[in-house]
Structures are given as C-alpha cells and as structure tokens.
Image 1 (spheres, rainbow, N blue to C red):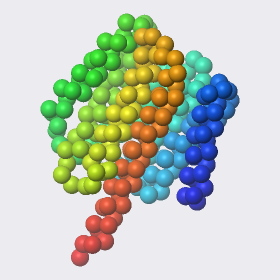
Image 2 (cartoon, rainbow, N blue to C red; image 1 turned 120 degrees about the horizontal axis):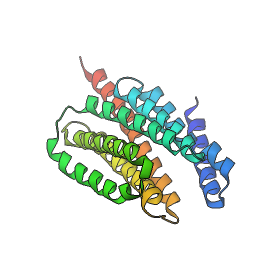
Image 3 (cartoon, helix red, strand yellow; image 1 turned 120 degrees about the vertical axis):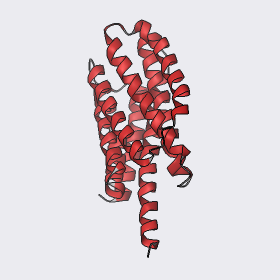
Length: 222
C-alpha cells in the first residue's frame, strides 16, 4: 500500500472517529475506530515484519479486533480476550528484544496492578476472573517493556518507546476499568482513545526503528 495513502486514511479515520465520539454516532465509531491500528499493523508488517516486529504487527491486529468488540454492545468479554492476546504478543516481542530479567521492576509494576485491581474488583462481579487475568497480562507487558529500557544499546525510541507505549496503554485500560467497574468517568472516552492510540503508535514506531537500525548495522558490517 502507498505509505502516503496509508497515513492519510489512518488520520482521516481517527478524526472521523473523534467526530463520531463527540456526536455519539454508533456506526461512524464502529467503522472508523479500528482503522488507525490496522494501518499501524500494515506499516509494521511492511517495514519490520520479522521476529519481534511480526509479533507487534499481530498484536496490533488483535487490538483492532478488540476495538471492534468494545464498540459493539455486549461484546466486552470478547474485546478483553482480544486485547489480552495482543498484550501476550507484545510480551513475546519485548522478551525477544531484551532478555534482561529486570526483577527489580516487578515491585512497581505489581503495585500498579494491585492498585488497579483494588479499585476495580469490588464492582467486577462475574467478570472478576477475566479482569484478574487481564491485569496480570498487561502488568507482564509493562514489565517486559520496562526491561527494554534497561538495555544500553539502541537510541531513545528503541529503549524507551516500548515502556512509554505500555504505560499509555495501561493508563487507557485503567480508565476503562474504573469507568466500567468502579465509577463512571464522564468525558473520559477521549482520554481513553488518545492514550491508547499513542501507546499503539509507540509500539509500532519502536518496532520499525529497531528493524531500521538493525538493517543499517548489517549494511555497515564487512
């Protein structure tokens, strides 16, 4: 696909989704919500479609499926499953990028996960088990993204992009959980989608940058 067309269509779809969100237009939101993430997946597949990059692309596609599910009534559980699969794919990519155990980072990540569960579990009801599993998976994703930042090699985007993306994604999901299980957060929909898009974009950019740098290093090798 033409990269300019890909970017223009993704930006247009994102803008239309925000319009649909502001005007509460169901069909406009449903048709436009996943396209930005699909476009990111296509870009990653084209520019970094091997190893960790391929896992990032599949994770983005899983997120697009989750986007559609969350836009539909009574499809919250399938959407949660789709996003959990996406996070598991991100974990696999980050582990491939960094084997650093980063055990010290488990404490702050566990505190984040525990606080989120403390806020959400009282209102989870029958969704308690899926919620616990999902929070564990996203905590693992944040932990392994943080491990990438500990590596000395790579530029700022390669090292810090995964962590920044994971924190934005985690913030977005926390807002969703609080809004659904604890108390309504009027007007949070815009913060939720913008931080989610930013997180996904950072994952995609990190994968592409990592592949680009690897290709440049290989070209310089004798």
